[in-house]
Length: 95
Image (cartoon, rainbow, N blue to C red; front, side):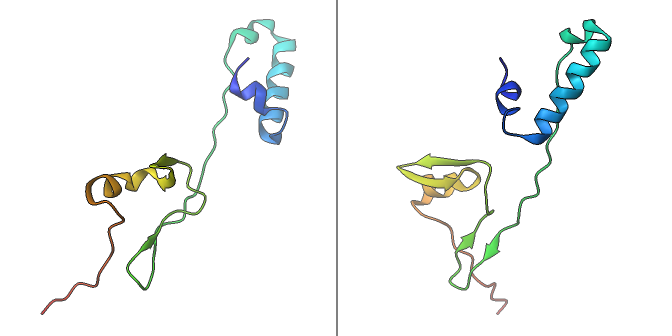
């Protein structure tokens, strides 16, 4: 049983795709050996720069991970490893 089969019970899109697949398989049983495919698209909010220089990353980050018991953004984990904390943004002084 694939992940899509497990998700079909709760996800309307997957359930619809599986229904179409089964309908097609009834007309041509050879399609049972074809794969079931679906595609998802996600829009991610860009970084917010806060007044104190910290950066608030994507809301609902799809790739958060645990690092030293803390939930962190995987795309910025190198900052914690190399510097021991989050890098801050500061204004550029042209003088």
